[in-house]
Amino acid sequence: EKGNYRHFMQKEIFEQPTVVAQTLGSYLRQADNSVALPQLDFDISEIRRLTIVACGTSYYAGMVAKYWFEHFARVPVDIDVASEFRYREPVLEDGGLALFISQSGETADTLAALRHCKANGQVIGVVVNVPTSTMAREADLLLPTHAGPEIGVASTKAFTCQLAVLAALAAHMAVKKGLMNREEEQSVVSHLLETPACLNAALDHDDDIASMAHLIAPARDVLYLGRGQDYPLAMEGALKLKEISYIHAEGYASGEMKHGPIALIDDEVPVVVIAPSGPLFEKTVSNMEEVRARGGKIVLISDAEGLEEAGEGCMATIEMPKVHPLIAPLVYAIPVQLLAYHVAVVKGTDVDQPRNLAKSVTVE
Ligand code: M6R
Image 1 (tube, rainbow, N blue to C red):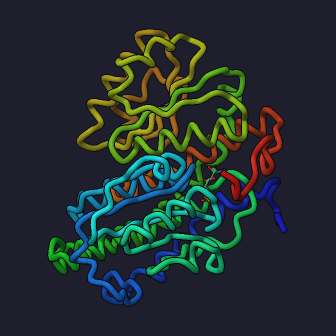
Image 2 (cartoon, rainbow, N blue to C red; image 1 turned 90 degrees about the horizontal axis):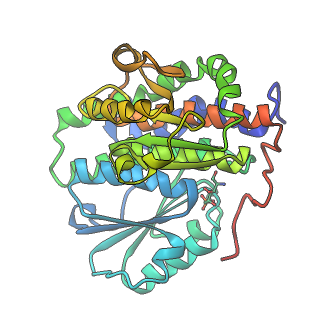
């Protein structure tokens, strides 16, 4: 079943151009570059508040989507991990949409949070990869990802497919609220449709990433930094690395470095910086300088423009294609996944079945 791949995780990473295209294909109409969501039996333009709840990697997809819902649809978004959400007292007013994101559709805490929101009058939307799952059955609005079965415990293709669905939903909401005109919709959709080609371009760097894995494998701690919508990716990168390579890793917002974690930096701590060129790039470069001044070893993931400006003096660089900011989180997920994968391979851990973990967490 693994074909020519050594692990399911590797196979699933490489499936992403195909499954993201499949997923986008069911939410976007290529003929006229429009968003095409299933018929909703509520008026999405009337939604006053969005609550997003998920766990692990699915939670990070939700964190990226928060930026999109705020930016495009101008809707207030509350997001939390399910295990926290269900034990606080979230204020759920009528007229809210609660979105649950889950590969399996069975995660116990996420399901409990869903039932809590349902009992409190929220419209229930779910983004799940298993269309026959419990969450799918209990939803008012089912938005499936078409990633196909994900076997590796480390979630990869489900994540990028979740992002694809959430981007389409944010654009749809913006259109319905009159915040995105036809021309803007066409532009957003055409950028989304460029994603599979950009994912392929990112996958072309597999060999480069494999050959730098030995630089990370001996580390005891690794920091990941990102800003804006790349901040959740920093956390996703850290989760992926710790989960399969057992190296301690933390994801931080670049600007938070000087509020504590910079104390950890010395020449033993690799710092992976996720920073496409753009308006926030300069700020991240100055955070990189702070790391470098303390002997930190930087792995910079950026595009040609970013590497040209800040690549010098890095321990390693990974070049991504220049992409529209909207799709950057999908494209930059690839090097982050590949880096974790190759480091785990160097360390010889059980990539598909890491210790202490289960694919579907059906207990609290
Ligand atoms: O099936 P779900 O998406 O609800 O699972 C959520 C998390 O358990 C999951 O993403 C977990 O964090 C992964 N092992 C991460 O790679």
